[in-house]
View 1 (tube, rainbow, N blue to C red):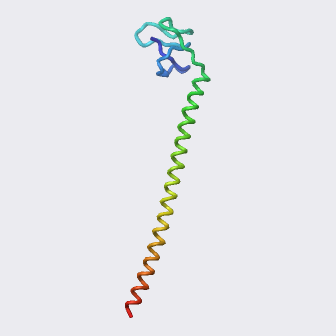
View 2 (cartoon, rainbow, N blue to C red; view 1 turned 90 degrees about the vertical axis):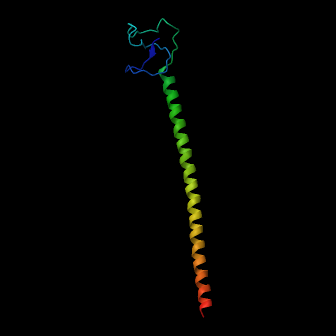
View 3 (cartoon, rainbow, N blue to C red; view 1 turned 180 degrees about the vertical axis):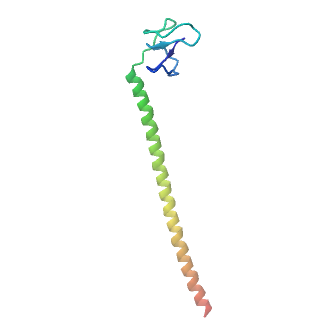
Amino acid sequence: MSLCVLDTGASLGCGLPCPQMVSPAGSGRSGSAGPASDGPAVLLSGNSILHSAADSVTSAVQKASQALNERGERLGRAEEKTEDMKNSAQQFAETAHKLAMKHKC
C-alpha cells in the first residue's frame, strides 16, 4: 500500500492514500501523480490538514493556559495563607513577650 507524503517526501504516517503517493520500499513502484491502484484514494486538502493541525495547537495552548491560570490561583492562595501564618506568628510572639514580662515582675 502507498503512503501519504508531504511535498518534502516525508511520510505523514497517517496510512491514508492521497494524490501524491510513494510505495513502500521494495515494491518496485515509484511516486505517481495520481492515486494508487490498490485502493480508493481519500483526498485530504492541504487546508483541512492545516486546519486540523491548527485546531490541535489551539487546543494545546488553551489547556496550557488553563493549567497556568489554575497554578497562579493555587500560588495566590498559598501566598495568602503564608501571610496569615506570618501575622499569627507575630501576634503570638507579641502576646508571649507581654505575658513573660507580666510574670517577670
